[in-house]
Length: 79
Image (cartoon, rainbow, N blue to C red; front, side, top):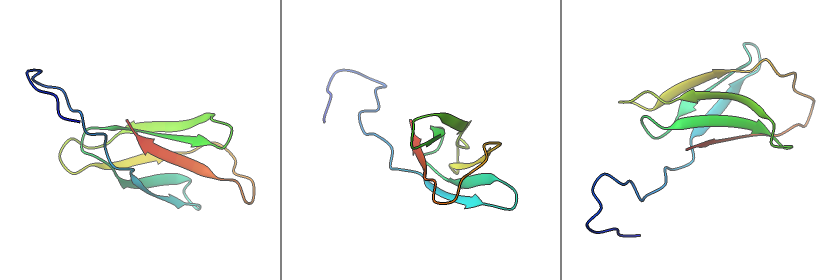
């Protein structure tokens, strides 16, 4: 989508963040678009954690206090 005459609007959505769960520390860490908000939800859509990606390198960490069940999925995306 190309918007003309409208300064300051980011019309390109960010790429999906990469995410890795460290089971021992219950921390999800990864890289997303710099400055974007990253959210983690379970399959039911319940918010489990959120963070803002670093403004220059996009790194983020999200501690998870939710108890994971074997086979349970987590989803992350940046906004």
